[in-house]
Amino acid sequence: MQHALSSSRQIGLCLVFAIATSLSCHNGGAPGKTDSGLATTTIDVQNQDFNDMTVYVLVNGQRTRLGIAPGNKTTVLTIPRYLIVGTSFLRFVCDPIGGNRTPVTEEIDVSPGDQLVMLINPGG
Image 1 (tube, helix red, strand yellow):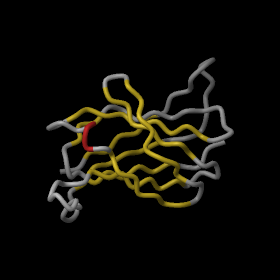
Image 2 (tube, helix red, strand yellow):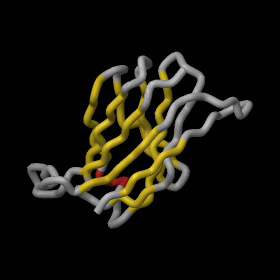
Image 3 (cartoon, rainbow, N blue to C red):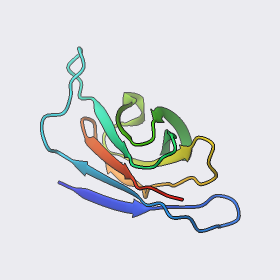
């Protein structure tokens, strides 16, 4: 099963910026398991932008920080288990450190054990 989404949003004065965030969910292999045998849900953030990004997940309007995705690097972040009950609908926010644009993905359905991939394209 594969989902592909692209979206960006400017907060503030609706200024246009050149960044696209794409997110895809795939089942390309066995999901990770914790010591207790529960599936781990992760997001592989491929940050092709120069800026470091603070990555958040939005669930029912509540923002939870997942971690930092350094510029020009790939980072794997774990989505906390308490945010995913059955199938949950999530959005991801990338807040550039020292920047003024905040791309947000579309809402996607995520189940425990999913492995997500988010590509942050270079922006200006």
